[in-house]
Length: 383
Image (cartoon, helix red, strand yellow):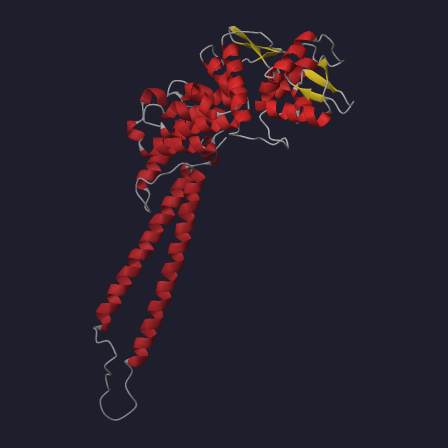
């Protein structure tokens, strides 16, 4: 964060004693240092970008090392997770998040407007965690609205936002436990998706996948479409197809008509599937591809079996031809003793059963191709 501070709405510019390159930083983090906090409070000079210009009586290496410690980094400027400096920084950020959640605005440099509420926030911290906030604050600055951003999202409620600040400020999914409860996990996933908070979104979707059941599957399918989660969407389709008779009719009716029609047909196909009854199906196109691949494999094996039978019949004919010599034909010990005609009939019956099975599968595939026209298959395609 320190390395990219200038592009992350740094609000402080440290001017060094040796006239080295100034250090851009964030007041919310520099204020952890008592001496710096006192100097920040005593300074009232700003540059053209509105950053507080603070003269600092240290050379560049010393000042940079101090700033890196305050940002929880090691001497090379890399993240030092688990170090004493990082632990202290995390505690400080959580304290700032708690203040923002209470509506406090001491030292805040931005205002976040949500439905029915306003919050004083540090835009540098929010922009560091979320590209959505980064773009929103940049647009607000260009459009002359200063540092005020509006988050018009139904999920950004008074109950959700305080817990969200803990994640936005500290950046650890473990700090978002209050958001990942059974009541809030779906709104959290939708909010995290809008704000481009991928770690939080992924964790929320993992929990939703574990909670899919007969009652909530239809509504979760609609949420999966909004989240653009192919994994969750597929899990919901698979569950509805496999447990179709148990799915809540009231919630199922909320789905678009083309989706309901596609799921009914896929459930019927799963029950009648000649390869595996009640198979786990989630994609009509994938299902048809599996059927065609199986048909091709069965046809190949059947043709190979027919060829072997023809060769066996031809070989037996040669063996049973009259010997062109005096005396009876000698039967050697390694030759199998069997009833040729009965064996031939058994093999032919097996081949006929295989042929009928192939024709049944071919007819089933044709029926599925007719049932799952392009528009029906598109209704269940990942979006």
